[in-house]
Length: 289
Image 1 (tube, rainbow, N blue to C red):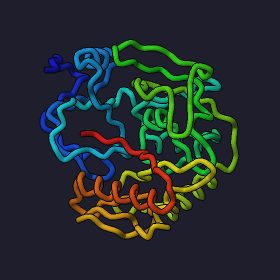
Image 2 (tube, rainbow, N blue to C red; image 1 turned 45 degrees about the horizontal axis):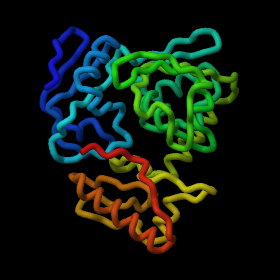
Image 3 (cartoon, rainbow, N blue to C red; image 1 turned 180 degrees about the horizontal axis):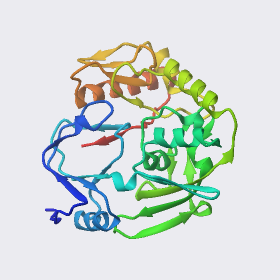
């Protein structure tokens, strides 16, 4: 049992519905939900949970069970939401909306994140998964990261100590607290960001709640969505969950879909793609059960 004294900066919520915090609008109840605003409280929570908790950002790549979760959920609060410029580097809190960072960079003619505009995630989540779009990975502009391990200890990791790969980073088992970005001077960034956002909306399906892309793309420029579409699965439904008609790598919630509905579609997609192409799709989303 986690016991933490309430402080003015630690918010403890009882019986929270996760569907209110996930982009696909699916998820059951959580009896221990913490919004943390200081590193001290965060460290205390991490230690008292023994590192067994879920860390919630914007909830954009999470498929959470409809059943009550036994693990507590920790969310970084407004004290971790900031942008500070220090000469050549820009320090950004991990809870900062990525959209907020893109707007700041574009307005200040700082090049490096405009390609990723429109991804509904926090800065910490973007770096942890090394998000990429239109030929650019966010790791290309990450210079330094302040993070906490599962024992509650804080460290600063420099660029040459980090490891990034496609949809992976060396921060998977750590909590990112803040990130320093190093941008180049750019020009006409508002127009570029506008065009990237327009292209994203054309390619994706944002009419219904979803987790975004469910599966990772394959090496050699093979898109999972193309394989799924090639199996004739666009529009296939399980109750109120459906493979998007617009982008086959999206599973959308048409209203009232549940965890098992989406899980059923994922299983079907994997089986059909493997049967037709002899390819094993790897999930990009994270399950909370």
